[in-house]
Length: 120
Figure 1 (tube, rainbow, N blue to C red):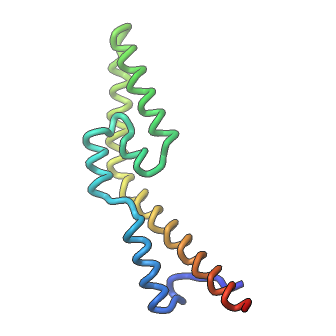
Figure 2 (cartoon, rainbow, N blue to C red; figure 1 turned 180 degrees about the horizontal axis):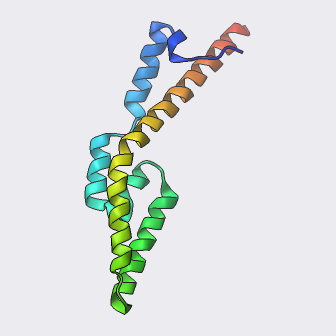
Figure 3 (cartoon, rainbow, N blue to C red; figure 1 turned 90 degrees about the vertical axis):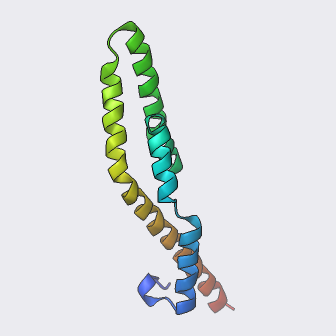
């Protein structure tokens, strides 16, 4: 079984991998717009398929609202705000990991196709 990397792909295969990446990678502008307008509700995390932590952000916001009416819920809002601010710096790394995953998946498909053709 042959192991692929982008360095040993033909020009045609490399173009195919790059076109798949461009079609499927998350858009940074969309991610930052979701972060800006829906950051406290985890909109950007849903976009990057980080559903668990996105739901946790929603629960933290809901808990903060409830605590605000009962006690001093500012602590929850402070944590949410810091979390959202930190995410602004994490978004480019998330996109890069998505790009790498798309590349790996596409190269694996190329490898499987080549193995099927070699079997005939």
